[in-house]
Amino acid sequence: GENVEQHPSTLSVQEGDSAVIKCTYSDSASNYFPWYKQELGKRPQLIIDIRSNVGEKKDQRIAVTLNKTAKHFSLHITETQPEDSAVYFCAASQYSSASKIIFGSGTRLSIRP
Amino acid sequence: DGGITQSPKYLFRKEGQNVTLSCEQNLNHDAMYWYRQDPGQGLRLIYYSQIVNDFQKGDIAEGYSVSREKKESFPLTVTSAQKNPTAFYLCASSSSRAGTDTQYFGPGTRLTVL
Image (cartoon, rainbow over all chains, first blue to last red; front, side, top):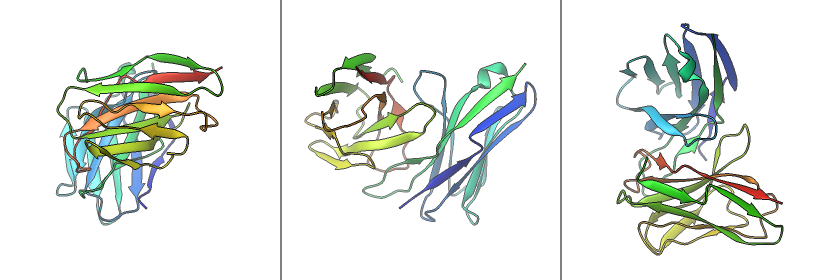
């Protein structure tokens, strides 16, 4: 079945620097890749997603890139701020009649002041 | 996010008891999901339902049961057969059966077995 691997599991960056989180997936039929942010004790919230017909998508300081050939996608956060500290989850899924989203194991991002 | 709610926020259970976690959504979403999250871990799928009166097992369904009698509601019962039920439980919904639709999460229920 589909498997999603996420790295690193923890990441600490200086405020103002960039952070990159990488994910790989196993099922070549996957065509939807969302990223969720979960603050401590709260629900995961979608921050950005990308579909297989595009290679990159940006939303202010956040960008996601997708390499379908290599089956990996990455989250890039630029000019990091303290409020970026959270756990980030990548996920992959495909359109089908019985589909479900498979989540990565999460990356705990800490922003150092 | 306000369209999907879970109750209670905290729940304490004695060993051997069944408990039911509530999940309600007013987003008119077809699909609903239950996940379990352990400290420092990712999200593991327990059950999901793509349409009323139908549901499928996820990766860790043993010891859990669900029902989907109404489109708006997808309650999860944690039975006494679940040996390690202490965890954070998240319900989610999406607008269609397609996996390519965004899932929206409820605020979660933290279950503790005493």
